[in-house]
Image 1 (tube, rainbow, N blue to C red):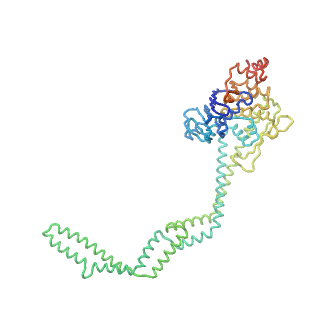
Image 2: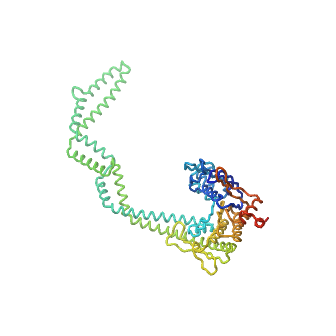
Image 3: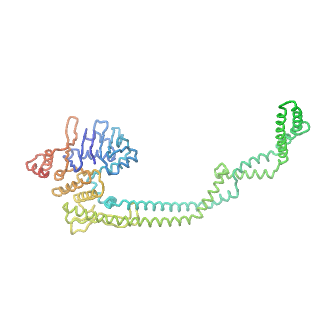
Length: 552
């Protein structure tokens, strides 16, 4: 419920502080006094567009703040998801609009997005104005109302999941068909590419090995000559390194009898001799192995050229990437070859998903039709009490050709106020007063089925008067057992039924015109209702009638 409302520098309101109570509150005042301004301010708390024109002339910014008690309305989880403090059931919403056009939103003193504000406020405030009566002609509103009265969220959730699964399977099938069509066109080229790569028979690391061999083959004579020079340096008659080392080792061994570390030095030379002999042998072997082979060099050059051509052609840098490309082409061609099989499998999945969807939709239709009968009976009974004894109401179901997010149901609200007239589309047959009563009765029915927020009726009584107005007031009063109700009204019969009464009025001063709202005492209520009955000149009869309406 809305417990307090603060408005500053908004339109004709300089400063307003309003404390509200539970139950049925009525707001009255002359036309143009500022009732619509209060609704506009509340609209800002619902996330409506902020207009700098609404800022009071001369003010730097306007502020609208509402404090709510949000028990059982599902707001806390929304706030937690938005990382907004919500330790208790109190929710404070504040909108600030600067003259520069900048708008800021706060929930519990934490900056919030408009999306979060709208999600929260739709659970806190329900402003029902005359234009909302047109919703009776909108199928989405009718279906949402039926689902609310049905009170079977799991059935609706099951359908929504089945619908999502079916949509997903349909999208997958479409993607497979499009992929198959594209791949079919590229198939010949892909097979040509794969054939080239498979014929190349590439091996990981091959290019590096080939480039090394190419260097060796291209400079074979120079390498062989250098190796022979190395062999000669190690073992020719003049510089036989090994022979010299053996002589040194023998000499050190002779000295070891008299010199303690001579044996260690001899051992170190022994190790060097072994390594030099090994190197010498390897150099000789390499010299024998290296041969100039023009045919092999030609093969290596050609092989490197083939690989480099493939690298450029496929826009990659390594042989490993070419190998990966080969596997990718094989996979793609396998997919093309198996496309029909995969499409057939997906078609089976789509059929199963649609079958599950139709079953979920049928179950949803059953639940809705049962709720529709309840709505028809409830509205008929309420409308009898609202002065329409011959009313006929029917929620007409037809089956859609194709399911959508709401199900397979197409629903029309059919209405007739006269016994001899068959029910027809409510938007085309019902008068403004009849639709106002229908919407009020529907709100009362919904209030019995769900935890309702603060409901604000904005002149919903337009087009009715007298006894019917009183009965509409009684219906609004009955809704108070489920929700806080505020009603902006011009009818004394409704105003007299409120638990609390507020009056909006304008005041002229040196600064201009200002709007105010004040709670009325019992005596002030008598005066206000008498004024509504007789106009500016309050007669004794109007005062007596006002007391009678107030049951005083």
